[in-house]
Image 1: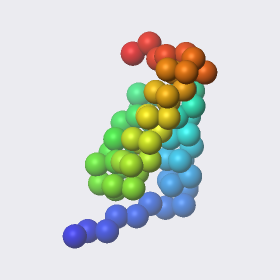
Image 2: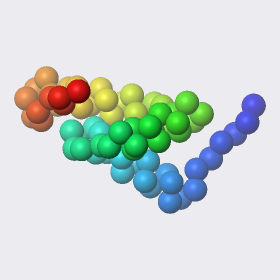
Image 3: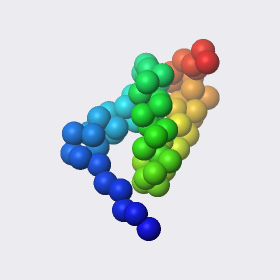
Image 4: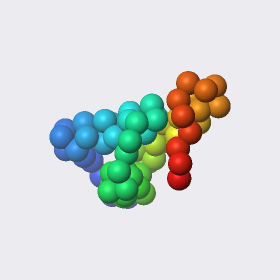
Length: 70
């Protein structure tokens, strides 16, 4: 098993993108692709993304943020 790790800068960037995703702020296609790349190889990132998407969905269903126009 290969243990993958992120640099401090990358980890902070990923966390910032995940936070924006969770709160309904704009996340570019490139940023989403980066998250997907890390999520495939790092289970912790995958769980953070899943949690952010659940949080966003909950905020949308409660009317606290507008739904995305995907």
